[in-house]
Image (tube, rainbow, N blue to C red; front, side, top):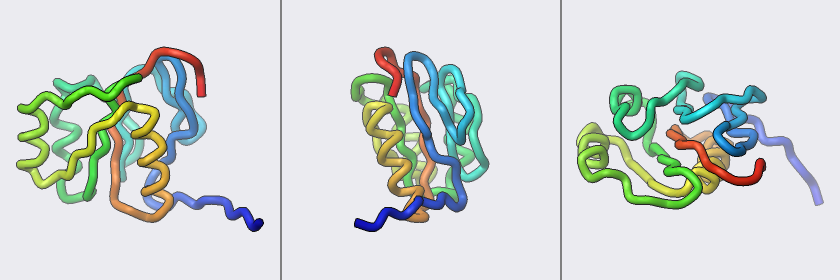
Length: 122
């Protein structure tokens, strides 16, 4: 079997996560984070719409990690994001991390907004 190292062009992968943090590009970040073409930044959560809306036109899909379990995105937020032309996929944060990394490795135009989880480190 041949193994190839994944090269991420145009984005920063999620290296891991644990209780209250995400490791992104080798650096631990506490709390919620937003990762997109412009890099990694803090995100204040579901009420913090502006950084998400700023991604319109830069990405095709925004993954929203809702924490340890999947939960519905508030309808008002979904409507605003989709109205701005953003494709939105909601899932638990661990699944959002994995999906984002796979599509980023394929060179897709993606971003991920992650709420922290509780539990064991990954």
